[in-house]
Length: 233
Image (cartoon, rainbow, N blue to C red; front, side):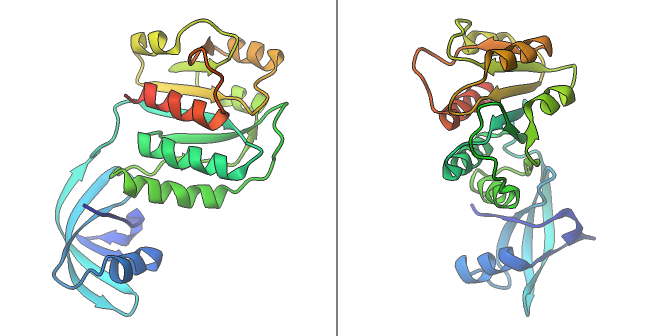
């Protein structure tokens, strides 16, 4: 099964218009033709089964046959706040893999020990589209502009589970997440050098629980992927 993505405004009165890059993927890569049945997601929780009715210029018009909601979406809403990494490709890998796992929101962080401060937000958002389709999800995760760690802490909602992995911590993340009851979870992942003690202290004051992801030291992008897989298992 192959998913195609269109924004919600491209779906009107049971008609879906596939344009732009998705049109090229539909016609040139997947070689779809008039009469073929395809699956389209609007990134807002809906998946449509539709029939291609016409392909004119650079628009494929499709008629909706059925609609499903929240297909392949986790019951837990996970926000990952991850410090920008020195190697941009590692951050991109983290975005791709955590979206495939089911993350709902990604917040790039600028921390005390953050080395790279170059934001590639539009590229990250493009990666989320591909990862959403790859994993047959129907909700397009949000990737926001980078924020400072202090601003992030000030914006965290007062409810929901909050965890901050730290290599010197002994409390098992696995045990805590398995007993957590709230459906919303936020996890903070530090940069290559880790969070400072001051940042850990500030996070604790905001309700974050320091946790351990295991005895081995993990790269930041690996820690984010591990944390996501444990929350969304």
